[in-house]
Length: 191
Image (cartoon, rainbow, N blue to C red):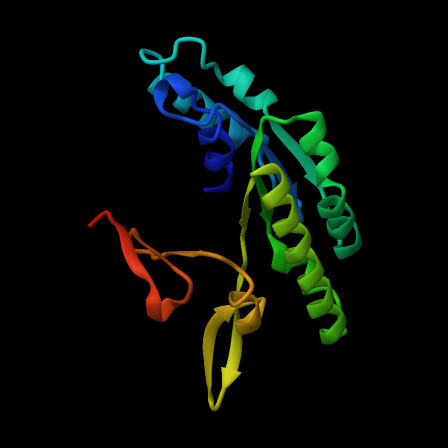
């Protein structure tokens, strides 16, 4: 999904897109350039008639990649993202895959939450100043609640109060959008 967003943001304005670029911040070290190239070729074919100059090779050049294997590098990258935005003013989306991955490596819960707050505030400031969308993935983990294990977001309940919108994907192909699960609404049903 994140790779596809990095390409979809580039759809030409003549075809109803933003004609932008993307910054992909990889914390899990599992970015797959081959998959990105495959998706770009598919998008090129899809828009061949409407936008003949929309080519996979150009799309790949408009996905800027930064590796952040730890929380310190992630913080430094987010704080210096304005440099990427100044150097490439056509960046319209910044993807962090995954925010939880770097933060979970910090043992001190208070330090982790403080860093999370600082990251979110920095992202909001860049959003306001540069009109850029942030897409941040979270991972799921298991927590023991009572005598049962439940699947929960790794960043916990507090994180959900810091974000504007959440998207949930189900195995059955349904997509939900909302601030919380209780207020979410179905936006896609592929059944």
